Image (cartoon, rainbow, N blue to C red; front, side):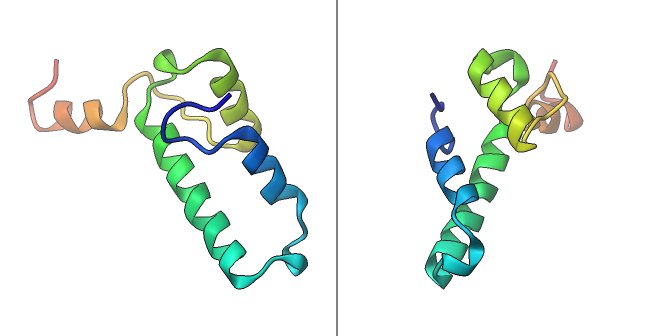
Length: 83
């Protein structure tokens, strides 16, 4: 099961299993856009707040982030607004 703002595992699998030669330009663009959005969502959410299945899915798809702090928290800390 995917979480809010994330691409579902079945969508990822479907996009990966269909050969690029059989995809239209629109499908290529959509896959790229969805992949980038999913990667950004993965990075924004700390691993400590992800479900076990989402962490496993991220690891398998290469979207694994190795930080405990979210990108937003890191930005807050950098400008002195964090902990």
